[in-house]
Image (cartoon, rainbow, N blue to C red; front, side):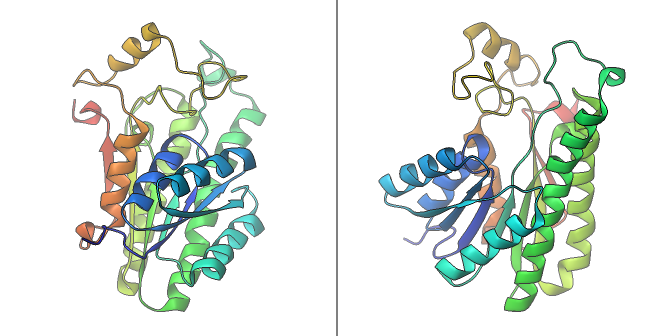
Length: 262
Protein backbone atom coordinates (compact mmCIF):
# COMPACT_ATOMS: atom_id res chain seq x y z
CA UNK A 1 0.00 0.00 0.00
CA UNK A 2 1.33 3.42 -0.95
CA UNK A 3 2.31 5.78 1.84
CA UNK A 4 0.66 9.11 2.57
CA UNK A 5 3.51 10.96 0.82
CA UNK A 6 4.42 8.36 -1.77
CA UNK A 7 6.85 9.78 -4.34
CA UNK A 8 6.43 13.30 -2.98
CA UNK A 9 9.48 15.51 -2.59
CA UNK A 10 9.72 17.18 0.81
CA UNK A 11 12.23 19.79 1.96
CA UNK A 12 12.59 20.02 5.74
CA UNK A 13 14.65 22.79 7.31
CA UNK A 14 16.29 22.09 10.64
CA UNK A 15 16.09 18.39 9.83
CA UNK A 16 19.34 17.55 11.61
CA UNK A 17 17.67 17.09 15.00
CA UNK A 18 14.45 17.22 16.98
CA UNK A 19 11.17 17.71 15.13
CA UNK A 20 13.00 18.01 11.82
CA UNK A 21 14.77 14.67 12.18
CA UNK A 22 11.65 12.90 13.45
CA UNK A 23 9.71 14.32 10.52
CA UNK A 24 12.34 13.27 7.99
CA UNK A 25 12.10 9.71 9.29
CA UNK A 26 8.29 9.70 9.42
CA UNK A 27 7.85 11.32 6.01
CA UNK A 28 10.33 8.92 4.40
CA UNK A 29 8.48 6.02 6.00
CA UNK A 30 5.39 7.28 4.18
CA UNK A 31 7.17 7.24 0.83
CA UNK A 32 8.56 10.78 0.62
CA UNK A 33 11.90 11.70 -0.89
CA UNK A 34 13.39 14.04 1.68
CA UNK A 35 15.88 16.85 1.37
CA UNK A 36 17.41 17.27 4.83
CA UNK A 37 18.41 20.91 5.19
CA UNK A 38 20.38 22.11 8.20
CA UNK A 39 23.17 24.51 9.12
CA UNK A 40 24.75 21.66 11.11
CA UNK A 41 26.17 19.45 8.38
CA UNK A 42 27.10 16.52 10.61
CA UNK A 43 23.62 16.44 12.15
CA UNK A 44 22.05 16.49 8.67
CA UNK A 45 24.32 13.67 7.55
CA UNK A 46 23.22 11.58 10.53
CA UNK A 47 19.56 12.14 9.70
CA UNK A 48 20.22 11.01 6.12
CA UNK A 49 21.99 7.92 7.45
CA UNK A 50 19.04 7.06 9.66
CA UNK A 51 16.56 7.53 6.83
CA UNK A 52 18.60 5.43 4.42
CA UNK A 53 19.12 2.77 7.10
CA UNK A 54 15.33 2.50 7.32
CA UNK A 55 15.13 2.03 3.52
CA UNK A 56 14.00 5.59 2.92
CA UNK A 57 15.33 8.17 0.49
CA UNK A 58 17.08 11.33 1.66
CA UNK A 59 19.89 13.69 0.78
CA UNK A 60 21.50 16.45 2.84
CA UNK A 61 21.94 20.11 1.95
CA UNK A 62 23.72 22.79 3.96
CA UNK A 63 21.24 25.58 4.64
CA UNK A 64 21.35 28.65 6.87
CA UNK A 65 17.73 29.81 6.77
CA UNK A 66 18.78 33.39 7.53
CA UNK A 67 20.54 33.51 4.15
CA UNK A 68 18.08 33.74 1.28
CA UNK A 69 20.54 32.28 -1.21
CA UNK A 70 20.90 29.17 0.97
CA UNK A 71 17.14 28.64 1.09
CA UNK A 72 16.81 29.13 -2.66
CA UNK A 73 19.69 26.70 -3.20
CA UNK A 74 18.00 24.08 -1.02
CA UNK A 75 14.84 24.30 -3.13
CA UNK A 76 16.93 24.06 -6.29
CA UNK A 77 18.75 21.03 -4.89
CA UNK A 78 15.48 19.24 -4.16
CA UNK A 79 14.32 19.86 -7.71
CA UNK A 80 17.68 18.87 -9.20
CA UNK A 81 17.77 15.56 -7.32
CA UNK A 82 14.10 14.61 -7.30
CA UNK A 83 12.55 16.54 -10.19
CA UNK A 84 10.14 18.76 -8.27
CA UNK A 85 9.09 20.07 -4.86
CA UNK A 86 5.79 19.03 -3.28
CA UNK A 87 6.08 19.97 0.40
CA UNK A 88 8.08 22.67 2.17
CA UNK A 89 8.37 22.19 5.94
CA UNK A 90 9.79 25.36 7.47
CA UNK A 91 10.78 23.87 10.79
CA UNK A 92 13.85 25.81 11.97
CA UNK A 93 13.44 27.69 15.22
CA UNK A 94 15.48 28.71 18.27
CA UNK A 95 14.38 29.37 21.82
CA UNK A 96 14.47 32.61 23.75
CA UNK A 97 14.96 30.69 27.01
CA UNK A 98 18.75 30.81 27.03
CA UNK A 99 19.31 32.46 30.43
CA UNK A 100 17.37 31.02 33.37
CA UNK A 101 15.24 33.64 35.08
CA UNK A 102 15.69 36.29 32.35
CA UNK A 103 12.73 38.65 31.97
CA UNK A 104 11.51 40.63 28.95
CA UNK A 105 13.55 43.69 29.91
CA UNK A 106 16.69 41.57 30.08
CA UNK A 107 16.48 40.77 26.36
CA UNK A 108 19.32 42.37 24.40
CA UNK A 109 19.37 43.66 20.86
CA UNK A 110 21.41 40.59 19.96
CA UNK A 111 18.71 38.35 21.46
CA UNK A 112 16.06 40.18 19.45
CA UNK A 113 18.02 39.95 16.21
CA UNK A 114 18.75 36.23 16.69
CA UNK A 115 15.13 35.32 17.38
CA UNK A 116 13.53 37.42 14.66
CA UNK A 117 16.12 36.56 12.02
CA UNK A 118 16.01 32.79 12.52
CA UNK A 119 12.42 32.25 13.62
CA UNK A 120 10.63 34.68 11.33
CA UNK A 121 12.91 35.67 8.47
CA UNK A 122 13.87 32.03 7.96
CA UNK A 123 10.21 31.07 7.56
CA UNK A 124 9.63 34.04 5.24
CA UNK A 125 12.45 32.89 2.95
CA UNK A 126 11.21 29.30 3.02
CA UNK A 127 7.65 30.28 2.19
CA UNK A 128 8.77 32.69 -0.52
CA UNK A 129 10.89 30.21 -2.42
CA UNK A 130 8.41 27.40 -2.00
CA UNK A 131 5.65 29.57 -3.47
CA UNK A 132 7.87 30.59 -6.37
CA UNK A 133 8.57 26.94 -7.13
CA UNK A 134 4.97 25.77 -6.69
CA UNK A 135 3.67 28.47 -9.01
CA UNK A 136 6.31 27.57 -11.61
CA UNK A 137 5.24 23.91 -11.45
CA UNK A 138 1.62 24.97 -11.81
CA UNK A 139 -0.02 22.17 -9.85
CA UNK A 140 -0.14 23.41 -6.27
CA UNK A 141 1.91 22.44 -3.23
CA UNK A 142 1.99 22.35 0.54
CA UNK A 143 3.75 24.48 3.13
CA UNK A 144 3.93 23.45 6.78
CA UNK A 145 5.46 25.85 9.28
CA UNK A 146 6.53 25.20 12.85
CA UNK A 147 4.81 27.83 14.93
CA UNK A 148 4.26 27.51 18.67
CA UNK A 149 1.62 27.79 21.35
CA UNK A 150 3.78 30.74 22.44
CA UNK A 151 2.54 32.52 19.32
CA UNK A 152 -1.08 31.90 20.33
CA UNK A 153 -1.03 32.70 24.06
CA UNK A 154 1.46 34.02 26.60
CA UNK A 155 3.88 31.14 27.10
CA UNK A 156 7.52 31.61 28.05
CA UNK A 157 9.92 34.05 26.41
CA UNK A 158 8.02 37.15 25.26
CA UNK A 159 10.20 37.99 22.24
CA UNK A 160 10.27 34.34 21.19
CA UNK A 161 6.47 34.27 21.40
CA UNK A 162 6.27 37.40 19.26
CA UNK A 163 8.35 35.76 16.53
CA UNK A 164 6.13 32.69 16.61
CA UNK A 165 3.08 34.95 16.47
CA UNK A 166 4.58 36.30 13.25
CA UNK A 167 5.02 32.74 11.95
CA UNK A 168 1.42 31.94 12.82
CA UNK A 169 0.19 35.08 11.05
CA UNK A 170 2.25 34.59 7.89
CA UNK A 171 0.77 31.09 7.79
CA UNK A 172 -2.81 32.38 7.80
CA UNK A 173 -2.20 35.31 5.47
CA UNK A 174 -0.31 33.23 2.92
CA UNK A 175 -2.95 30.50 3.06
CA UNK A 176 -5.58 32.97 1.85
CA UNK A 177 -3.37 34.55 -0.81
CA UNK A 178 -2.26 31.18 -2.18
CA UNK A 179 -5.58 29.34 -2.02
CA UNK A 180 -6.44 30.15 -5.67
CA UNK A 181 -3.15 28.48 -6.68
CA UNK A 182 -3.96 25.26 -4.78
CA UNK A 183 -1.12 25.93 -2.35
CA UNK A 184 -2.06 24.93 1.19
CA UNK A 185 -0.31 26.61 4.15
CA UNK A 186 -0.67 25.38 7.74
CA UNK A 187 1.37 25.33 10.95
CA UNK A 188 1.93 23.01 13.85
CA UNK A 189 2.12 24.74 17.23
CA UNK A 190 3.96 22.60 19.79
CA UNK A 191 3.90 22.90 23.55
CA UNK A 192 6.77 21.91 25.86
CA UNK A 193 9.30 19.62 24.14
CA UNK A 194 12.07 18.58 26.56
CA UNK A 195 13.45 15.74 24.43
CA UNK A 196 14.46 17.78 21.38
CA UNK A 197 17.48 20.03 20.92
CA UNK A 198 15.18 23.04 21.10
CA UNK A 199 15.93 23.63 24.78
CA UNK A 200 19.11 21.72 25.46
CA UNK A 201 19.73 20.19 28.86
CA UNK A 202 23.42 20.90 28.23
CA UNK A 203 24.37 23.19 25.29
CA UNK A 204 27.76 21.49 25.08
CA UNK A 205 26.08 18.09 24.71
CA UNK A 206 23.14 18.74 22.37
CA UNK A 207 21.71 15.21 22.29
CA UNK A 208 21.84 14.62 26.04
CA UNK A 209 18.60 13.31 27.57
CA UNK A 210 17.32 15.60 30.35
CA UNK A 211 17.07 14.39 33.93
CA UNK A 212 13.95 12.59 35.10
CA UNK A 213 13.20 15.59 37.30
CA UNK A 214 13.25 17.92 34.31
CA UNK A 215 11.06 15.59 32.27
CA UNK A 216 8.51 15.40 35.08
CA UNK A 217 8.51 19.20 35.31
CA UNK A 218 7.88 19.47 31.54
CA UNK A 219 4.77 17.35 31.93
CA UNK A 220 3.19 19.89 34.26
CA UNK A 221 2.72 22.42 31.43
CA UNK A 222 0.25 20.21 29.56
CA UNK A 223 -3.25 19.55 30.97
CA UNK A 224 -3.01 15.90 29.94
CA UNK A 225 0.16 15.49 32.01
CA UNK A 226 2.40 14.47 29.11
CA UNK A 227 5.25 16.39 27.50
CA UNK A 228 5.33 16.82 23.72
CA UNK A 229 7.71 14.70 21.67
CA UNK A 230 9.31 15.30 18.29
CA UNK A 231 7.34 12.30 17.03
CA UNK A 232 4.06 13.93 18.13
CA UNK A 233 4.94 16.95 16.01
CA UNK A 234 6.05 14.80 13.07
CA UNK A 235 2.70 13.02 13.07
CA UNK A 236 0.82 16.32 13.04
CA UNK A 237 3.05 17.71 10.28
CA UNK A 238 2.55 14.53 8.24
CA UNK A 239 -1.21 14.95 8.44
CA UNK A 240 -1.05 18.56 7.27
CA UNK A 241 1.41 17.69 4.48
CA UNK A 242 -0.67 14.79 3.18
CA UNK A 243 -3.82 14.62 1.11
CA UNK A 244 -5.68 13.72 4.30
CA UNK A 245 -5.68 17.50 4.86
CA UNK A 246 -6.69 18.27 1.26
CA UNK A 247 -9.25 20.90 2.29
CA UNK A 248 -7.37 22.28 5.29
CA UNK A 249 -5.44 25.52 4.94
CA UNK A 250 -4.69 28.47 7.20
CA UNK A 251 -4.85 26.28 10.31
CA UNK A 252 -2.67 26.57 13.41
CA UNK A 253 -2.69 23.05 14.85
CA UNK A 254 -1.74 22.96 18.55
CA UNK A 255 0.27 19.92 19.62
CA UNK A 256 0.09 20.84 23.26
CA UNK A 257 -1.82 18.35 25.37
CA UNK A 258 -4.70 20.83 25.65
CA UNK A 259 -2.73 23.86 26.84
CA UNK A 260 -4.38 26.54 24.66
CA UNK A 261 -7.83 25.12 25.38
CA UNK A 262 -7.57 26.14 29.05
